[in-house]
Length: 456
Image (cartoon, rainbow, N blue to C red; front, side, top):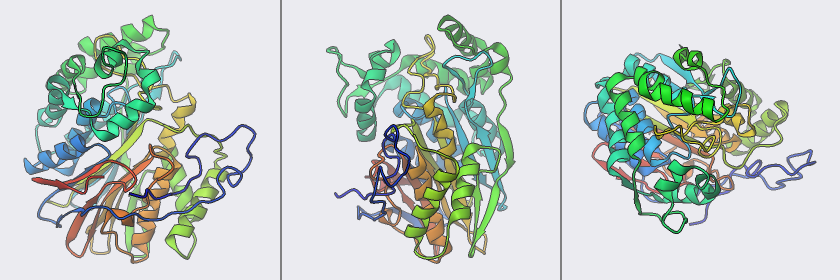
């Protein structure tokens, strides 16, 4: 399959001394690719989930089949990803989610990992607090049922997926430096285990069990919190007891943007990602959505003086839509592949890198988005993550919808192409049908309740 090239800018770090984007990538374009049939189901009668990692998408669909809400599904997907896709999603990281409730109100949950008060290379984790607060507010199932699938993957094992295999190969030098990750992902000869090999993480499963039983208190306090503090202190980190016990996620009304007949909920000005996507959308002009998005993204990067982005920011995005019309979209990051590259003692938790490192710019490109038409029906729920290419891809999808163009197959998105670790995954609805669309240049999965198709 020919992978599309989408926004080649910043697919690799900019060359030192390079002052313009054009001097790095002279040909910036977007083109679609055709792949297998998407996961389609009638709107309002079922649920859909989409993720970069297939096991997570299947987990989301299974939770929806149990009567879970979209918020339940994305929470379960996150905890599954901590086991099956730890290079980009972890208990030690953070992120942003948008939830649109059944009354049409859009809520933003911010829970990015923060710099420790005492400095050092380890971030204060935010993800557990964020997903706990979101699921408490908008979940339909008991908390235990959204954590349990990830716990099971970590405890009993899972085969390495194709997408995880690709990420492990790129991050093998990081893996070799951490005993916990090496034990899970390296074979006896010290090489990365192949795709399909079954791996497990007992220490992580025990931490997830604490979270399942005690909620966020099972993470920020007790055995787990104590282990994080002890490890940070022993390794020169600056995470304090106050940092952990005082961490709070933020819930605010999402920023609303009206384009044509579409109303979109985006991250607000309180985060770097909100500022960046707002700049992109402000700069969007008339004409072809493809050309307009490329130009707007260039202007936004110029305006923020962004000239150097690491090739892998350790991020991923996912979304869900339930039978009642609730939608949720999330993007999370570790601030680099496997974050700091250090597991906190015997917890199985890989700590995110502090946001002050170069990959800490990852938070600026987490772009969850939910859009609805004039009748109030969800038309798009998705997330871009991993870099400006991911943000551009989800912005393009929104712009296309606002101009009356449908999104009904993965090729209608624009692949991130030259930036394989920046992705956009979406659920799109039109005329009573909804489709789960994984990034056409990635290796994710769109899943429906009881069925999963559209695998890349």
